[in-house]
Length: 157
Image (cartoon, rainbow, N blue to C red; front, top):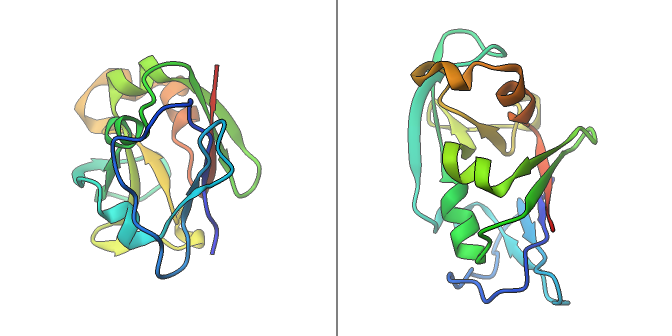
């Protein structure tokens, strides 16, 4: 399975991430630590969940997306500033300022319409915004930040 990598700022995480018992989908490596935090679906699902319904320019119709708000994950990691580099399986990468992430608060979606996303369906993780709620989410900048097949994240200073 593909995993994601996050390099967080040196801070004590506010959340005690559990040890994975199945395939790791998210690996978090805090700066200054040799011990990565590895999350399976259960571990990531232990964070508060959220969902919204929206259409996208990449899919047909309206769908419900479910996952963890980026603000929740960043808070659990103790990350409040900087820039996050998001990288996909195909090496697409995009840098997003933490301030913008916190202002717009997209979801790191694992599910669409109640089903986990496969790699073919833009999974296992997709950074997704509520496009239908406001014109500010229907811009080329936001679309370029809507990275699917997410497998790595790194906090930049």
